[in-house]
Image (cartoon, rainbow, N blue to C red; front, top):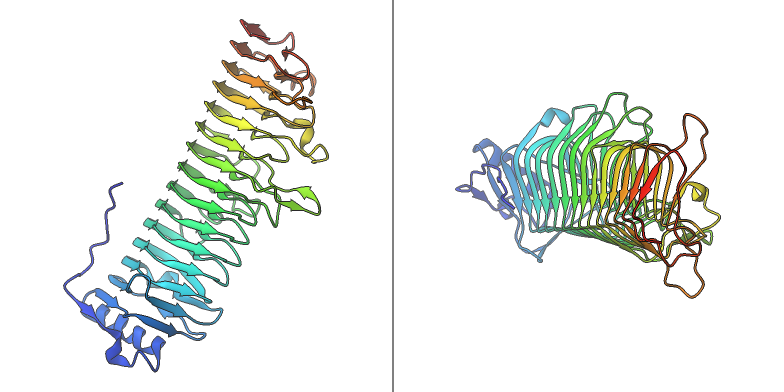
Length: 436
């Protein structure tokens, strides 16, 4: 990936030791930042050692970067953010690299552009590891390691100060965040052009990756053009039931548009809350348009649908491998679930997926109140001794006229080897050349 780095003044470097780094780290580093800013920009290079900020925060300035000695420069402190910038600062051209933030609040940055965070460690962070970042543009966050954040591993949002756009989050490892692993959310303004790729997320308290509009989002915000690709998600939902990848809009009549979810490996840890499986779906897509969900591998067992789509249109679900969905028969959404579950959707192409061993006597592919869609060349089967996947494919009669499913085409699906052989398709749709 080509990275357009900020235009740093690399010819000017300043060592904060000259300002008494060992006796008052916060004051010394801040004086170095101020001096570099007055010079027109540069790098504050922090040497090896552990430096305690207390409950004070560093205030970044444009064209001034912070760099440590990789693996040897540690920043500690109290619960306040180690780095803070308010909207009036309007930061640009910043690199933060090779620093270890530990037992401290991490970042609180509003309004920034051309910012890079790379090769940093965030351990035992109070709050979010990288974040809260909002009203951000042209941001690259990569090759960082985060472990033990009390909130989200990374949080980036559109805020009242403005939208966030051109965001790149890749090759990070996030472990044991108590909230979402990585979250990019349209709250008080929109999100445009975000890429979340090649990250490792282990055992998040909520979703592994979240690209969402929340119920508290402002009216009129949107998410336009996002890619979630080639991530490894292993375990989520240890605190709140959630999806491994949540690409949902929880705001009525507001839709995510042009999202691609491709090549991710998603595996559960069997997390439970009150004895009930809390890893909800591998992938959730609610209120989406023009979405592609392709080539994802999903295994380990989830409470409800493996891939769940609702109020979604013009979407391709293709070439995914989905094992062991719908394992919680008491789950509140189980009646609309399947290995792939679609509810109130239109113009969906479900093609070439493998759906295996769906539980709770639910079908491999379940369509409810779905119209004008094509379900083709899927293989839905159960190879267990006691089979728990009912039909290979079922088109529900629920909803009544005119809400019920109609005008769908089921062709070339392989549905042999389920508890109930074959397909259950209504007379309002058509089926050809299915093997059952």
